[in-house]
Length: 149
Figure: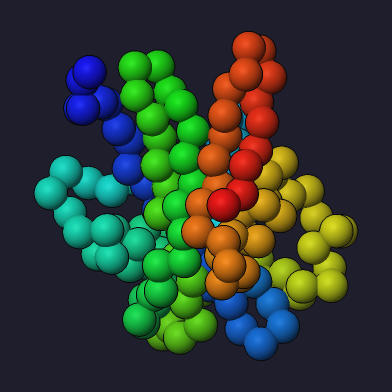
């Protein structure tokens, strides 16, 4: 059995204050809507450095002491896509948007008023629940099933 597979590595980060989350109104069609900012890990880059770099590129903020909270994964052709899920509540800098989408502070109680990406609440659950570590999409025929572990 082959132990090596093709893997795409990415990061997402929940940047939060006491009562609000920093969300990106993502413009790309493949995952459109309000979501956490993030992006790909570059070849040879550390995972922590990648999340700090991506947050700076997409939000203008330098996050301090990001905490790894879990992973999201799903199958792709000939491999899998892995997203390292982080959170951070300390940051410095001035909030800006990027070509990926506009950044908005959204109060927790107002989440239902914005167009969230389809799996936002499951991602948030894994990040916030200390009893969860993993969000996994499993393909069963032509159906995608979500498992939280």
